[in-house]
Image 1: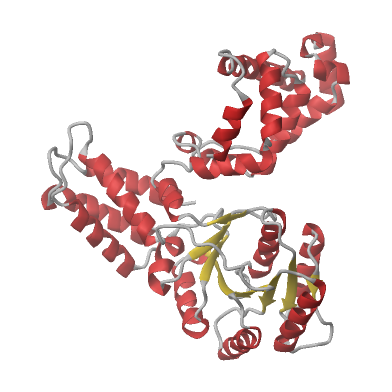
Image 2: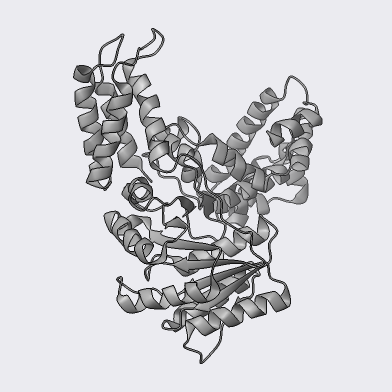
Length: 443
């Protein structure tokens, strides 16, 4: 995500020479390269021009203090403008209704049905809501079945009416069902087409008029670039939606949609889809996205994802074991499984400043987790609790039992011992006060 744009921008800032002040002369080549980088990322040409004009206006005449190079100051200016371009701050979804009604719109293939499931999952498991999914795509039977499967997977009920081809009536009946059974959020998945057409627009407009949603979201495939921006404008002209959802942002996308769409339709990007799993949904933070585009990582999002998997009590328990040199393979396996739940390792690494750049050309195979897991599962309970027992004969038995080689087992043992040494060093000053850990976590 945004890798090509990040590389191009980094090279652009290195062009900027000179000291003391940023002038129209020493900034010209840099801005030319920045605009070219944006256009190559499929950013709308008008947006790219407005962006570079704004950067130029704010940069020219800026004093450069001795400890800061002109290129570093330009990074700061471009960062602030990127965040502003994408909306400046996160905008939450409106859930004030009783029930709150959310209408999903978008073209066929944009990921609308899948995102409806992801949103229901997030609202139920992270915000304590009781959502109801509504299947209003009456033209594509697979869409109804897909929503049913997703609903079963995440434990959220799905309302559908076999034989009823009137999406307006289905949506109205679903609202009655929600009020009757006490669901506090209703998510209505509507039909899409391969392209914008009048029939689809009339139909979804009628659904919106009938159920008067508190939130209308437009779901768009970020990999379609400028087509995503053009489609969003057509939908917004008819629906006046409240926010945009960018799906498939983990794919090979150039980022043009994320950078252009806010300016073109003047509506915030509210969520992004970052993977296939049901928990692969993130609130869109323009400032954090600007950090990632400029190669600064996104440590805040990384910590938030980690906190979803690691409880405070578990962190304190683990820290005490490390301090006493009692960290064993049971702990190691548990932490690996929790890390795997956080998402793709390479994506997680890209959120840590500096690490993403180091791993850019590395192939990170998540299946290595399965190999390590198999090796640990082939150990006896005593061996997992006491790694010192693992002599040569035991290691050969474990390799045979796990379907791996003795080399794999030895590599794991070496990595495990190095990890234990490193972790002991981190807590060698003594176990921190748990109350301080709690306060740090809340910050």
